[in-house]
Length: 231
Image (cartoon, rainbow, N blue to C red; front, side):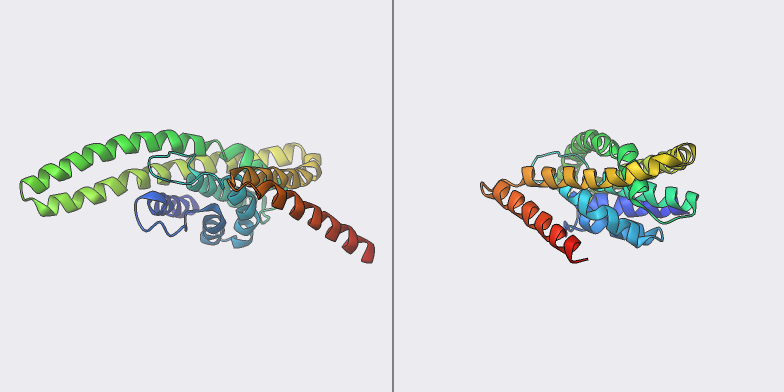
């Protein structure tokens, strides 16, 4: 049942991402908590949302650009993490989150290749819609729009559960086989967050972005030191 829910969420996010509405609900910062909530672990989705949003901050659909499929990657990672935690009998933890990213993130690259195929599909549908309008078949022309939305929905609805299933199978095996790896993986989550911050800063095109990034980093470091001494 969880995989069906994940497929539905991923498919709708893929449609919202580019074909309909585009209300930014497919962005990782919104999609990860939604996917986690749909699977019964909203807190796990909230844990993954900030680093994934920063990591894919530059993945924006503008014009003919085809970035990595951040919505597909987010759905797969969040789903894999939640389902792996369910198999282990625990909520999503930092070590599970890190492994989910490592296992399921590559599906975002596969999603970009699928987007290229969808673009070609949509071009043919557009020609068919023009021919239908020329022949005064208005209903057929309207249905063409639905045909164009079906392809990204189906691709994401299949690939996200598949990637999540791989993560849900691999992560418990790894953590059970090497229980001592949990501690280093927790530290690795902070490294992932740092890498995501750097990726987010790089994605910002403003000239002052690096200065703001390092100034904020320094401010947070000082605040943590002060709070540590106060304790």
